[in-house]
Length: 148
Ligand code: DQA
Image (cartoon, rainbow, N blue to C red; front, side):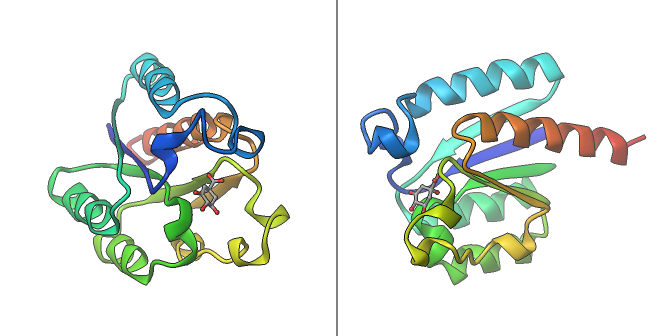
């Protein structure tokens, strides 16, 4: 199976960015750990990050043509703003899990609303980088079930 991990704006700053909220691990570290886990699970994990909305949208659109089976996405601030990213995910119809490092329900009220969450298979938030791992496990077990 092919799984695509997308991280949105400012997540390239993980490790130095508000570590009390987002933890001290860098994105490179999180990605390399996840790639190792994916390999152990026998799936291919492609990891990408962008600060640009259009780039995330392009990658979601490409997911369909490049036969990506599942998307794990932390849309970061675009969670709360992007109808365009929502439309891309709806248009492509690839199953996805939304992940947030922080508990978006325990912060400013503008973070409580997600433009993507109702389209997601599931949403994981507040568990730090472990949330990505849980999402990967869930995606793989669902794909295996579906192909049985
Ligand atoms: C975030 C939460 C968002 O509200 C915020 O804009 C981010 C990161 C998280 O992972 O906790 O950039 O998606």
